[in-house]
Amino acid sequence: MGLSKTERKLRIRRRVRKVSVGTAERPRLSVFRSNKEIYAQVIDDTKGVTLAAASSRDKELSKAKGTKSEIAAEVGKAIAEKAKKAGIDNVAFDRGGNLYHGRVKSLAEGAREAGLKF
Image 1: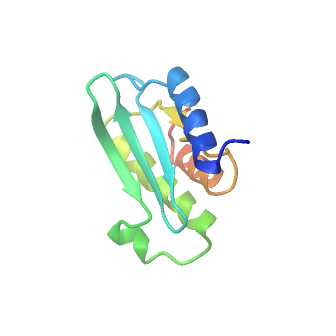
Image 2: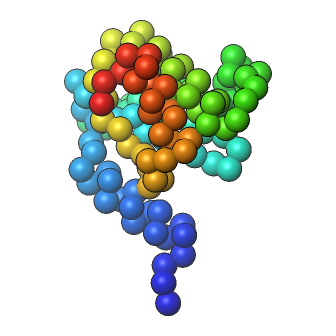
């Protein structure tokens, strides 16, 4: 019998995390996607600290109208602005076991537009 969807996603997440480790000079941009919302964090794994975070539940973004992908792009721009304020330009992208498609892709493109490099 095959793996369930959640088990498969967990395996992919672990495989991605083996390669993608956030350091102080190049932290990890982690994406979590639920059915309704999308969350992004910039994490320094050496200290285990979140340096910046943004989500579709933030006050300024919760009023945003549009498709989930459009809102994800806005979250990407917001996380890039917060990272810039914290002095971060380069990040390692962690898609969190999700396919680089749809909302995850639009979040990444929004972050790139706002000036993050990865």
